[in-house]
Length: 192
Image (tube, rainbow, N blue to C red; front, side):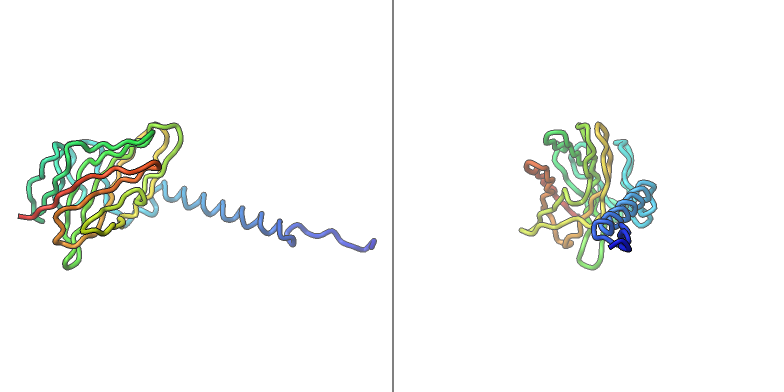
């Protein structure tokens, strides 16, 4: 018994679990840091600034701030949004700044909503695709924009949320999910 060596902590299960947790934490921190620097944004469309006079960030038609349909452009699509575009629950507020449509693959269109998320609370919140759904023709569609951001306490950020729909879609409902319920936004699409 006197020749028994003490066990190296690396060889124990708790030691291995501690080491694995440290590696996962380090990699996650690295990825978050690179994401904040914009390393992963190379393929994403540009977002629209908070200025109401700015134009659309993508080719297509954007809805005007008054809620009336925007004038047509080269795509021929216009989008009508309601006059009331701010939706709030507790400390989280979403404002639909505008919308636009662009052609996608054959028989499809992409509807892009530019949304501002305002965090009135003290703690960070997620601003991501998981908050939004588009109901059209009895089907709930998830966005494919890849929006995944964090809004710090008492601040705002804007981003684009996009949905791919059949080109014959004319009426749809944007659903904004909150922790304690949801708000809906009726959207009309037209093409002369």
